[in-house]
Length: 390
Image (spheres, rainbow, N blue to C red):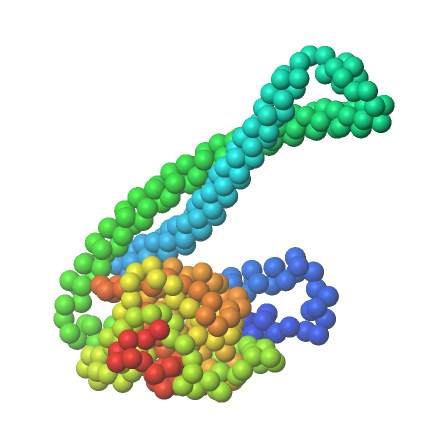
C-alpha cells in the first residue's frame, strides 16, 4: 500500500515535469507555479518515506532539524562572504579613484599657481603694458591673442579644478556609504557565525546521544540496512518519475561517453573505497572523500537535480540525474545550493563539504548509479594520485 502510494506520487511528479510542446510560450509565472508544485510533491514524498522508515525518531528529528539549520546558515554565510568581497572590491576601486582625483587636482592646482604667478609678475596693467611696449601693430595683435588665450586657459583650469573638487567630494561621500555598508555586512556575518557555532554545539550533542544509542553493533547494522533500503527506494522512485524526461543537452557529451574522464566532486583523500567492508555483510556502494568542512562540492557532469534534501544516514543529500539511467549522489554535505528541478553544469558548485547525517569527520559521500545499480566511481572518474583526488 505504501509503495503504491509512493508510485502514485512519482507518477504525479513525472506528469508535472513532462514539458508539452507549447511550454516555450508558457509564462514565467506558470513555470514558477509548476516548479513550486513539484517541490511540494517531493516534500510529500519525503514525509511519506520518513513515516514508513522509522526516520522520525526524536533523535533523528533533532539531528535533521539542527543539520538543516546549519545548512541554511552556511548558505547565508556564503552569500554574505560574496557580498563582503564585492563590497571590499567596490571600496578599493573608489579609493583608487579618490587617489587619482587627488593627484589630478594637485597637478591642476600647481599649473594654476604657475599661471597666477606669471600674471602677477607682469603686474596688474597687463593689457595696457602690452599695447604701450609694442611698436609693431601685427606684433601687438599676436600678443593680445596670446594674452587672451592665456586668460581663457587660466579660467578653464579654474573650472576644471572646481569640477574635480566636486567629483572628489562625491567620491568621498560614496566611500563613506560603502564603509557603512561594509560595517553592516561584517556585523551581520559575525551574528551568523555566532548562530552557526551555537547550532553546531546543538548538533554535536545530538550526535553524541545517537552514538550512545547505537553502541550495540546489531543496532548499527539494522540502521545501516534501513538507510540503504530508503536510498534504494528513493532512487528507484526517482528513476520511474524521470524516465521520460531528458536530462541531457544535445550539445553535451553523454555521461556514458565519459567513463574514466569525469572530475571528482571535491579535492581530498579517499578514505572508503567502493566495495570495502562497511559493517556485517554491508559494503560501501560509493566512495567517501575526506575533505575540509566548507570546501565546495562540484557537479561532475551536466544534469538536473532530482533530489536535494536531508535523508537519514546520508545527511544533506543531492542527487543529479544525467539521463540514460545515470545518476550521481553527493552526501553528508554541510549545505546545499540547489533545489529539485534546478539544472547544473559540470564543475558547478552545488554544495559544501560537511559531516551531516551524524558523521564525526567532514567529507563527501560520492556515488554513481546506473539503472539503480551502484557502480565504482573510481572507474568513471580521473585516475587518483594514490588516494588523493580532485
